[in-house]
Length: 400
Ligand code: GLA
Image (cartoon, rainbow, N blue to C red; front, top):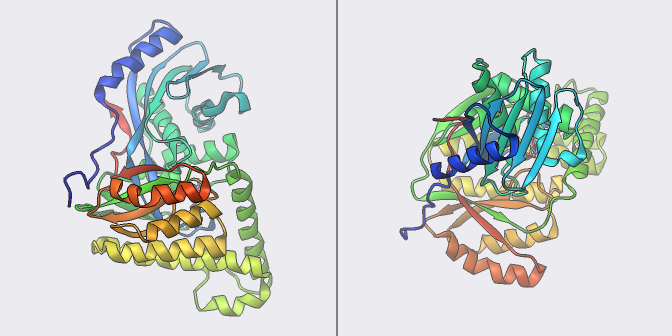
């Protein structure tokens, strides 16, 4: 393995913290010294769109993060600033609805309103965010903002809360406040997973396991296709509805399932006549994806990463053909990566419909992979690629 093959940690440098503090003072005036909190992004290893079908997922944190400087106020003001976006939002506890003009600030605001709903008294807050999770790269910068916010509020108020409740408050912020009907994958992973672990979660029983592992000579490489994710919100909602329609049709046909994930693979064939072909494809993806997650749980414990690569590949095919959350550019990129050195397997990261792919890579510097695929991809699509080699990241917490 070349010396650079295993990527160095991408955590935000501690020298950056005084800058966040200074920005806080500059924007929101003098006050008590802020404290700093952090939360990582996440990458899903397998389990595409299974979470809102009460299915199985495998995911980990990544070594890219959001850092938030925060201090309490007593005047009901909610002041947020993003250094990355250079966007300042001043609002208050009395404005309890999302505002499209508030952009990123709807995430911390949503968390604060869900905490109020849960009975927590918050007198007001100033927060300055900075992050190195690439936006739109399916690494869940939004859930990391949510998680850093809940860490900050609980830390400043010196309140305890279970990790489950933290995850559910953040999930409700995204669903009820921001209005994205996502599953629990992003928030649960960021809040419950730990460095050098991968999280297995059964979204039906919420039974989870942290599987310890070390990549050694392997790593995950996320590759941004350069295709924006404009379709995500509408297509995501449509898939949620299609899954619901398939569930209703199967129940109506006399199968008393509690979710699509309760379907046993051998039942699939006999259920087929009860479903429109499109809905059948959606169901087949969910059922087979759950099987792949179960298999991946075992192979990760055995550190059998080449087998994991094969499961990534099968997952990709199922996403692309049955769930149809790929796009022409992702398909081109996937095929190029299949012939790149060291790539053991590639699948769609996060929701899909543009955004990123994630590959499991062995012993090869990501620059060699870039050299192999970049030129042809840009010739074929007129788009630029971005590469993010990843390790797992630290759990959320205060930076002391
Ligand atoms: C997005 C959502 C998650 C999950 C994935 C697809 O990341 O936020 O809840 O549904 O898509 O697996």
